[in-house]
Length: 398
Image (cartoon, rainbow, N blue to C red):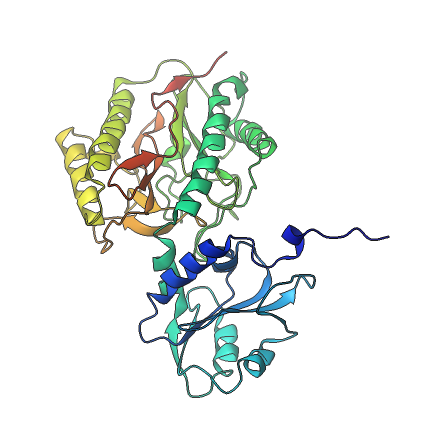
């Protein structure tokens, strides 16, 4: 006898009805001149429905969404249509085809875009990726609450890190122990990154001079990695006295990520490293006071850079041999969302933004220092830290 599946297992929509409406309406408000979107990217499917499935969401500017599903075959709900191939989509839509169709040009392959475009002969194509990226940059209260819960678990994992160290450990061995604890605490392991040019597994541990190893990825900190196929992060370097250990590990416990970095040490580290670390903390305090709706994102960059230059630390700021071009970014379903805190950013801060600030430094022969916290801009104009862990450099317990 087969077990009866619960409604939570079979329902395509796993979000409350009012939350679905809130998100869909937010997207529609940005669809100026676009008649409908056809969405299949996993992050966007999760945003629009609360689950990942093989198929498409057809979201018209007016009228209900239609959910075209290939797999899994047991999903149920209003406006759910099962298809074997995308060519069956227009049979359901009928004669009321859009004149302008939004496709995910940033994530779909060229061949997929060509195939989907042929479903709508004569229609102009718009970039649905940009619309959805903008919509997702302003979180709903429901999303912020999910990130609060993720932050609580993220902070709890970090509280155990000083006790995970054992004498003689390498960075990889420490990372494995942090990964194990994270998974046992419920971390999903998935590290979703927008775009095809950056990859990372579970997070980043940087020890000593490996923090100064340039990476091909536009991360705040690099690292050589354990293999050229994934050239970022831990490289097998032993944790030695006088070196820092920067931990920037996965905070994805429920599909929404928090981003947090803390620094640990074995024995004493240089005064320069401590000075730079305190500068990072001070930058956080200054920038969170500036993070009000309507503030240009680039103003945060400019203020932080001025503080760094004033303290004579610019040589080490956001890298040493290679420098990152940003000090913060939106975070949510993916780790690199809008807004971007960078010198040429055109983003304007808004209530509902969730931003990870990460002003960091690399001190030669010591390692990386500085903190990263995830903050949300609330409707009342205040800023809430979702990762309230101790910020000072902690010594390993040996």
